[in-house]
Length: 382
Image 1 (cartoon, one colour):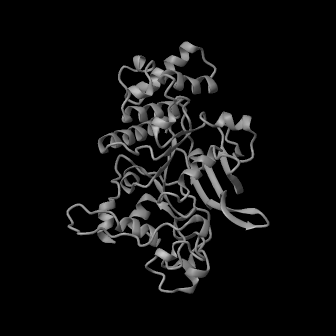
Image 2 (image 1 turned 90 degrees about the horizontal axis):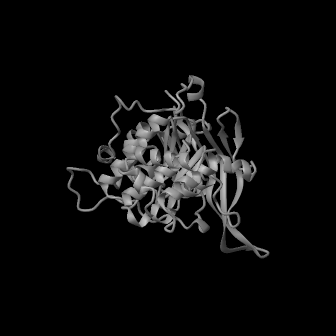
Image 3 (image 1 turned 180 degrees about the vertical axis):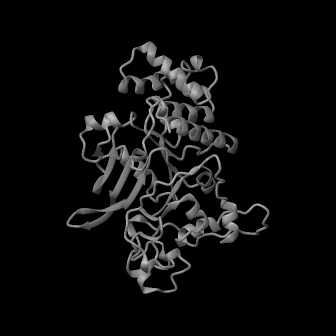
């Protein structure tokens, strides 16, 4: 395994987390009164634990509003403060010198050296992320000037190289064009080029293929995987598309109502889903070759975050509750129910014997020999 600089990663580096999130709680004020004039606060992220290793892709899956994007914004400390607030938790980041620092406690000057340089982000909608009044070259070179000591000519050469890497033809001429002159797929490639210009060690990709047609989606995801392998980069992929997860992820975290409810390797989560919510997601997928008048759906809707039900937040929609008082009284913790497979459900087989360990998995797929799990095949068996 090779760094972009050409040095090999040691086994110890491969086995050491690049990013560790522990008990992260992020809240925002709501219109509800809490008493004495104080407003109630909604926990958009409610005590999550995650790990990402070098050259690993962690996919974070869940419905809109479950806390996926707030988690990624918290890593870069882009949650607006106020109204947002970090109520608890730490985000450990392993720097290039091997030392860990808590991204939530370092000063803003130190954070700027990490943001966009060591950790970069591709946002959900490229047209709203790119400034329409600046050329593509100006926007890519801005990040280069901020983090690298180069001349304007060198910065332009780096920008051209970045565009070439993401498959944009005529890169030199494209630098002088504006975002509106490009298609959605090209703008997304521009966003990737901007994010990778400073060769980050971790890429946060928030729904990187939203609003793109299927062919362009496949090209963008293949490009990300290629660059990840070449640059030895870790990726935190936020998506609701289980097909994208099956094709690209090493590990999977399923989120619901601000919590991680299942965590494991992509094979374990797809082949043996433990949480009823994960099982419901797979059951709701159409199966090629199988005729269905209506798709299976998860009953009900995502709970109002300002009025979460008592006990497990999924219990009003869960088919396994059966008036179980434990489900309606106590929120189950995330436990390691099977070796390297975590779930948070009282009805998971052998849950009572589960271990209270942090979700921590260095698993990486062998892309040369590994066939991705099929979400359609999984749907057919649930």
